[in-house]
Image (cartoon, rainbow, N blue to C red; front, side, top):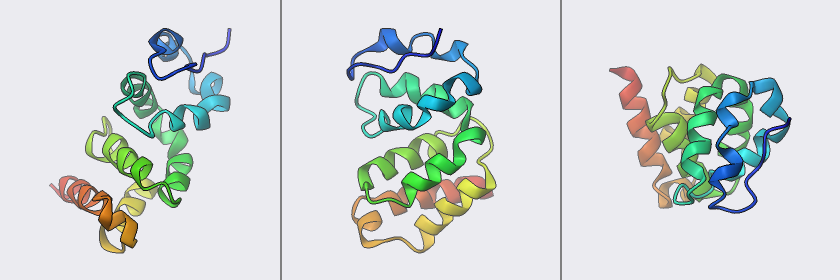
Length: 127
């Protein structure tokens, strides 16, 4: 049996068993799972974020690719999930991207307050 993708933003049933799958089983749908973090107000976003936090070391490159993209709101949510709310030490490559956002932000990263959030993450990791 393969892991299910949510069919809509309230489809908690589809993701209820996500934690029972290994990274290798979930790997093909990671990009789609990440898209559900475009708005953490969606009911499925919280459980998906929790699962993805548990496999962060495997999906760092996917996260960085999004952080280098143009979807500023999505970037904000990813800094929140994988930086501010990280459940394990932050991967050095991911931390380097957070530092880039904190110290060399784009105008859009400043406008969306992603820079401020990244600065908080950097300060938190220094303590």
